[in-house]
Image (cartoon, rainbow, N blue to C red; front, side):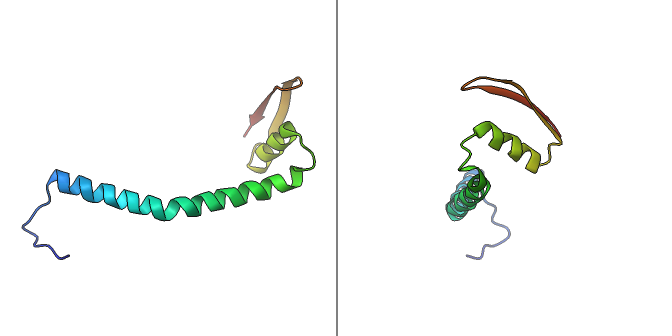
Length: 86
C-alpha cells in the first residue's frame, strides 16, 4: 500500500508492523531450520550409532569443528570431564 511521504508512522504502528514481520519470518524459517538441524545431527550421529559411547562422539565432534587438542580429564560410569583447545 503506497504511503505519502509526509505521513509518518507512529512508534506503535512501527512496533506492530515489526512484530508482524518477525512473526512472518519466524513462521517461514523455523520449520526449515529445524529440518536442517535434524539432518545435520542425523548425519553426524550415524557413524556413532553402533558405538553407543557419547564421550567418544563428543570428542570426535570437537575435533571435527576445529579443536586441535581434546583430552579426557576424568571418567566414571556416568560422568566424564574433558578439555579442548581450539
